[in-house]
Length: 451
Ligand SMILES: *Cc1c(COP(=O)(O)O)cnc(C)c1O
Image 1 (cartoon, rainbow, N blue to C red):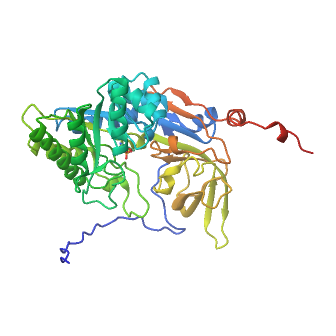
Image 2 (cartoon, rainbow, N blue to C red):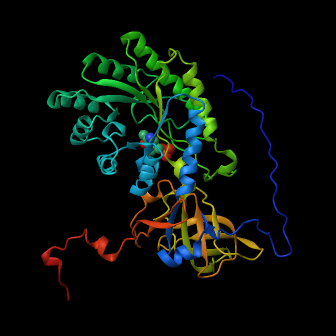
């Protein structure tokens, strides 16, 4: 075995506050307002818990990303990853900003159509596209990203039936130096599967091979991995040009950029260690510009960024139900925000701040949700000022995945509001009610009655 190279460790000095007479003072600031709207007023009007999205933050984050890429590469197109947050109002903010739609199911596909996205601006990813989904996407001229050979053969069958030449790309997985490697989706680069699939597509001549796609992982803390991936896709594109004199139209680098959240088990906060859009853009654009594309024949660069575009725009407001001490004396605070609403609390150390002014001192606290379940822990250990029953809290950076992966479990899901560019609030999803949930249920006649 080759000996691993010695890497010099880096030391970073961390400044911590000095303890006072009663313990550690806190440098936390209360979050009394979001985009100028008082948290207390939001809860009074719409209830607690409450998801709040900032349109201003969404648009400014998007523009930052757009700028990072378009200043480095001449042709850039974003496609909004629906599964990250497919509330219609949120999708439309991204569509207004010029994003296409990136979908991974028939349900999401229909949602994009419902929003008015043109068929040719919908990218259809994922391993589970039914024959019906594929036929619809083919007739709408959408961009179908083939995940496996069975899908490829279904499409070939459909081209005869429907008499259309669909626009397709393949999803490629590859070694970018990052573990674990995501090789369950698409065709592998290193073992030749990807090149096999491209040859099959070219020789059947029934599809229009327009692109190459990859999505190397999620919350990728290495910008360099994207440079490696872009280089490998460029190599495939150049191979197609050489063998078939065929030019693909785009290279789609997928999503996976890290947001500013802090991952569990990582010592430093996301703000300090997550790469910026500029870092990712530099890695990707350099790899593509250095590849052997002829001048004026650069492929369009598509990005399907999800979480990094929306996480910071979302907050979850809640209310303190109670404080108590565990058997060994540890302080705990129970709030009305549970993991049923906050799927990402399994991965992130979410920042939680009080929504009202507080006294100087804080204590190591466990924050529990309201569910009657041992796993309902929002934060295992967080230094919080002493909150009282009825106080409000703000959980930060919750815009990605929570409003799609939340569960109706024990309690009902709350309202979602957006604060618009003028500071006005709008409900974009109603809270669930007893009726809305039970309306899905059916009672067999014989179970109607009991004594
Ligand atoms: C989930 C997903 C994305 C978005 O990923 P993020 O990590 O949220 O940026 C993009 N493309 C595909 C194919 C996906 O499955």
